[in-house]
Image (cartoon, rainbow, N blue to C red; front, side):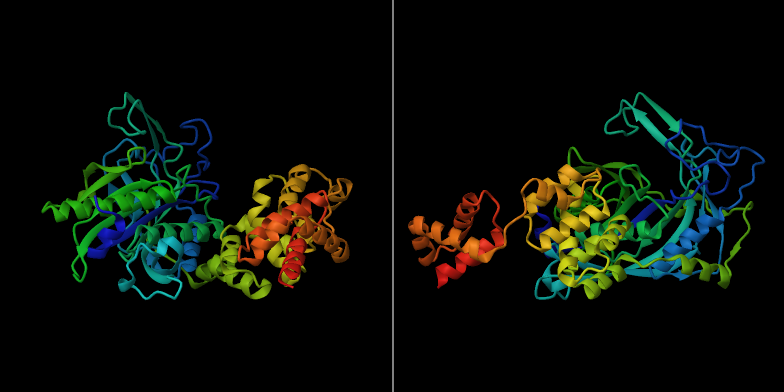
Length: 502
């Protein structure tokens, strides 16, 4: 097969996503009062309603509808005042009543958009001629959202003895109806994505948004957030769509990217050899790094959808919508821009902090009342040091940041200190002083060490003055060794360069 870059020079990939997100922060299911939990014993949280027994009547979960309206407002969607539920029929054991309650042509929220900032290596997937790029190769891709609709999740099936958990070849299949009836929102994009990296970034941004809203734990590993990718190809310059295939249940950002990349390359090979791409649903096999056919793709006619006679139409009031709007917190993009504006952070650092609500809260508590210099150090500590040491609290993170900002410890020492103090009530500064780790910043005392090292390292001095600037690292190491690692390496480097250039 050709590489992705080779394919995309001649072909345009048309990608749309369907992202399914369980509303895991709710207490009960979508249409009944059963407890919402997937960690209990199998089939413990079931009732006549979620099992679809005769005579059982569903009652909608108001908090679930609040959640989907919040999701729509956060993704720039229009809230549709009037909508209703439909029955989507299919025969499979994961839905005991043989139909799924979902929404029809009009969803609770529709017609929104998210803007993606694509940079770094990911931006190279898209040929320069197809998009306006900045001088650093980055670009912004506006992605339209067709709709976000509400539906109920199906039961969880465990296929035993098959290949990679699939029903094919399984010796038996077990069904856990605890998940059946879980409130689920499905976001459908327009076919505006053009590369696997754009799809990955969209999924990542949506996850950050929903986490910030607090409507789901968005766990790809546990399946509370899942993605289907629709992909087709057309020759560059053409305007009609090709035949699409669907990638089902991609449960990680990497799987989403890699499955789309493989399918783009596969379809290009089929078309260039004169073959035909069929509309079908395909499964991604990570271990073999390929997609395989699951089934022929169903159409809307196959589902025999019609309005659910047990559920009345919804008329959302202005008061209800405004109540939902008031619950929408500061979103990741706005938070990122505030961090850049208020604390002078690098944009990529600010984006990483703002993308996770827990990390953002920890950062804001740690950085309180800090000046711009200290804020930059705090951001570095929260992103690159704290994650390696579970149990670090806000006070410990702040103290180690202040020590780093004052050049009293190195980053290597900061790791050592937090490794020893995390999860305890030991103050990092006390630990530093008790273990003689504080770095000396006495320029006169360190200057004498520099003179001594330069005097006995004449060869390295000559190398520096001949153009080998990297030798400064060796000389800094000699200075640190001479002080028993008690000198500040940054100051040593500055003093060495001053003397060598003088």
